[in-house]
Amino acid sequence: MITISEQAQSHFRKLLEKQAAGTHIRVFVVNPGTVSAECGVSYCPADAVESTDLELPFEGFMAIVDAESKPFLVDAEIDFVTDQMGSQLTLKAPNAKVRKVNDDASLKEKVQYVIDAEINPQLANHGGRVSVVELTEDGVAVLQFGGGCNGCSQVDLTLKEGIEKELLQRFAGELTAVRDVTDHQRGEHSYY
Image (cartoon, rainbow, N blue to C red; front, top):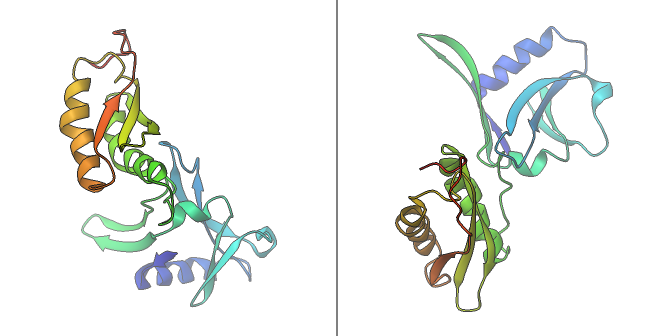
């Protein structure tokens, strides 16, 4: 679930030596599944471990993960790097902002996952977002734009040259087209 490099494990052991006996580390996600998700690591005293927590054993300590954070920390990596700028603990959690879908998830869930994980972060740079409204029987993904994308003069280009190409490539044989059902009204929120 969470990979902790040897350097990071050594770093944690040194830090934990200075704490009360039985103290471990807690790895967590604040605002999981949202664009404002943030990952963190903190000390976790023995009396702070709850029955629903996941306990991951490492040499000399445990990494404790709360039930809510667990699905968002799948494939997370913690490392401790030293370079000319000094030392730094790094935590990469590719699923923190979007919960990874299971292999047996519906096509709609898989398409929404790709949108949330890869397309919406790019649209967020312009204050926009997109979501799947429905998938038709003939394989058309019906999308709804919001935020800065609503009323943007570039939305057709974004849809056809960006989103549709990506989704049709990713889901070849399953999706046939992408259609926008947004009632675009130009306003102060529109990006262009």
